[in-house]
Length: 219
Ligand SMILES: Cc1cc2nc3c(=O)[nH]c(=O)nc-3n(C[C@H](O)[C@H](O)[C@H](O)COP(=O)(O)O)c2cc1C
Image 1 (cartoon, rainbow, N blue to C red):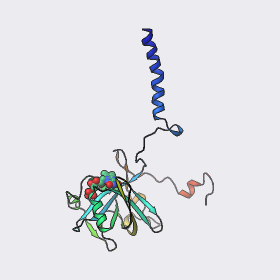
Image 2: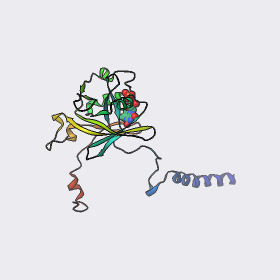
Image 3: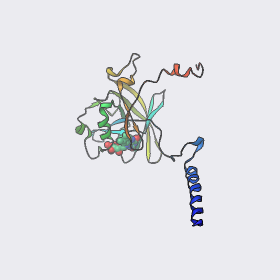
Image 4: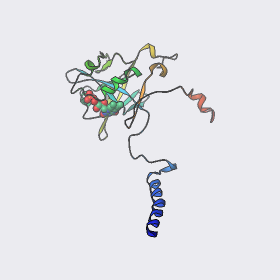
């Protein structure tokens, strides 16, 4: 009985210590492992043509702006996607940025493949020919970037396509006073990695210049 009590006490002390050792990282934060967790992840719908000139749409979140001058973006695709072959063929893609009403479209284009089905026909959306790059714009999306691939980098599971932005096409209804897209009007959304789905972008927190003044004058 005494032996059993000693084992129980030891377990009560050692198990919580071991558990905290396993998860504690720098600064007392929990380690989540080497994963692609870097919220917020954008939701872009990539437009491309296949070898027969059929337009396709695919959702991508491993994406971002990567240079201001020349203006460039990057997307990273698995070779298994139909879009990967399309972009290798044509060296171009469009980035179509959805408003919240297009969330079901962005979900569908991220699950179905253009190899098996015509996603434009399925969703009733309209491909529009670009005059600048060999990739289709999607008419119903409020904001589209027309992109010419300038560099392809093999990273592992994903291949990165860095492209120069040749033009940005916007519906006038989403533009703010300064002529740039107003987040409140664009009403886009983000992807939460880990299966939690799409989230709306939230409130305006303040002008960057004014916010930074709490700590000094900056530039
Ligand atoms: C929110 C979301 C984000 C995604 N991001 C990517 C991505 O960045 N790269 C990728 O290769 N696949 C990504 N996918 C998966 C592709 O969209 C999916 O495999 C799609 O069916 C490929 O279409 P395609 O074969 O017509 O090109 C994502 C899917 C979802 C739902």
